[in-house]
Image (cartoon, rainbow, N blue to C red):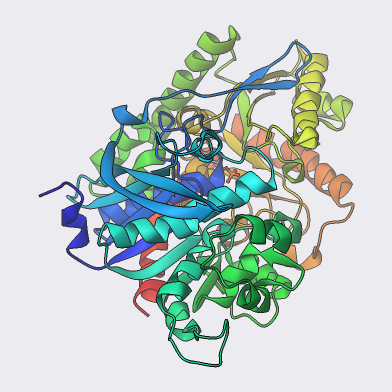
Length: 570
Ligand SMILES: *Cc1c(COP(=O)(O)O)cnc(C)c1O
């Protein structure tokens, strides 16, 4: 039996995502969205939830990040060999893009769990002999090129993905769109579900919208209106396959532009945001739609450092597939928690030494910050008042930073440059390292290897955030603005600390930076630094609370059970 056939025996949920991050060696992700998708799939595999995932195979990845002497980000292509990781399936499918037939092939990657569960992922690829040169490069880069390339990629993902599942004989119960990039799949479903009657749309077909809606689940991830993909109908008419009924598309996905989010919203019976607050914000953004909330998570085993894996295995056996067991973390002696943390910290500091030549002091309170360097994440906020920071933290604090800016995001690159320049001014007093090329491998050493995890985005733009959950699992408390998941996970002084005003007081952020900064400095000086140096057992209790009150709940096992009961088998 051909290898994929065993996956077509039972009904599955088809999970579509523009990016999937499984591990650093498969560079088909850029940040939180892709890592979430990978973690989702891993938990589905652990829990034996019948799923098949669909994404694109980016042969040139996202990019590798380097810094010039002036702290300006430079990018180079990634090269990797898909055939070392996955298996090319012989079956191909066709989609017409811009009047040309484009062949699509799929690579199969099987996510195997120690529980015996398996989830296949299909990585779609247009780099096939016989395709026009221009079409062979459609799937080369994640988030590269302009709008026309983006639309082509989304045609391959949505329409090509739905087609290849049919061609391979998958029996699909629900189509789950992880963000709007995949929403063209609804058009393929509509096309397949058309009812041939006279006098309706396009003359001869009626579109069974209800049937498609029953099949579709949509998760929105972006609380900023401008963050949603939009394409002009000129471009759509130029590129889209002829089967697509443009008139009805205009009815359901925006009069002026094709709004990918609106398309997915209009054709899904179950819609959710990725944290409670984000669900509320999305309701205001898209009035008229019923929007639920399922808070994101992280895959426990993937994000637990070997030091804590060892500790949890000894004290809470079974925790990796039943993370609820972490609720009993208080049974673990303080010294063992502290030793595991020091192990993770020493390991990370060794890594930093090898990469940068810098030796950080393991006894100093170390603040970590790493995520995509988008301007709204305000990575440089804490360095706004260097004199104040030195007053508070000289000899007591050090920083490790990481994160890539999108190649076209000048603002993001400026943020990185400012961080690096500010750090130079503090050198010899407060040390700061900005690690190059933040990716999943670095993240897995980085996050457990610092003492506190800083996050200060502009509200309400952090839909959920997940790196703070990775921190909590490894006993690293969060110090964060009350946005996204942290609104749900935060208990002041118990699981970590907040920065700035409570969410009820901030609708859309305008000019709250000074207030946030003041609160950040004040808490560091009066609460966090004293607790770390003068009350180690109090500090360790906060570490334990991060594990027992945050990590036991904010994980993709808990999250996937919610998707199953609320969205998949409704
Ligand atoms: C977890 C993760 C992210 C997401 O970080 P946020 O703080 O949630 O934005 C981004 N990049 C990598 C490599 C990650 O592992």
